[in-house]
Image (cartoon, rainbow, N blue to C red; front, side, top):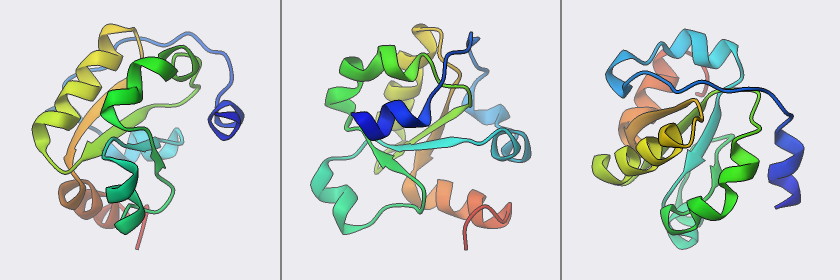
Length: 117
């Protein structure tokens, strides 16, 4: 958890809009935090560069830490619904979080916006 704490600093956060309105240029410019919500095993097999792994089942345990994020969060997984669940949960906690969908969709968008190669 210390790695997670080092990523954040205190800031008030507002609830984000729906995933369909993601402005990738904006969230990249503001230092988006990528959260891979899949299992540690799936994460170790393959994950996006710069992503941290917080499995969906553990998300509620780090909400306080994520609530101090000074940047937007983009959740992704292997299924759209899991990503949606994670983003909705964090949004309901007042955290700026976006539903990215599955790993392939997010990877394609981040490559298109030259955040990753």
